[in-house]
Image 1 (cartoon, rainbow, N blue to C red):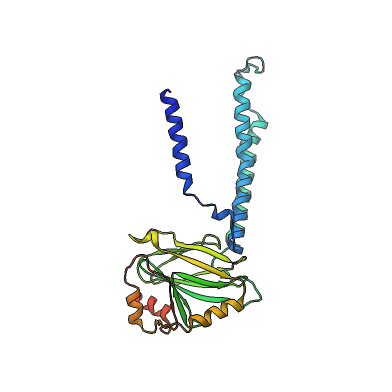
Image 2: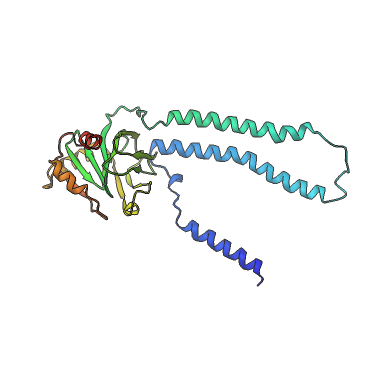
Length: 279
């Protein structure tokens, strides 16, 4: 086996090794925002192929034609071709214009702050990024969870997101957009699940040694009745988060924190976290 064959096999094995860790999450969206993002990626991919495929085919054709003496004509004074100019400039410009218009329209439609139209009342969840855990406060139910979200299917979810320490990134890939969780700021994100299930959530922004374990599950229950039964159950758990001192204790840097439920929450905890950072 010569050196070239060894090099090709190493490159192939390296490519397979790198692709093993890939997930096809974006190809199986479960939220209306993620579905629209998937459609945008697919349309952009097809539009790019309409340019890439002809370029590859023309390259192969030109190589064959001009290396084959009988097919080519010797034209030393050739300097301009309208057909070539149209193919080289007009088609790519049209595709770029199409992609720009598509991206502008979709970006406005998928603004994270834009409310999702629904006959159902949105569920508000205040998200606080800790080092390195997630705290989710349900202000209307006066409960909180740690490293787990439970939401009803086909119901808009309004997330208010901040951080008690360093910058993180709140991301549920199957439901939709990533958005940054930053101290002193309230980032807003609106999502809605279309299918019940358990969806993986994470911090997609490197923020320290516990970054890789800063994960949570999003449990989408089939309807509001089951969701309210879950809320009632959490409202009776013994553990409480009813003082700011208790919040400061769980906000201490820690790794691999388990899922926790809190039956009551310190009033206005989300704003208190932001104001504490401002002071």
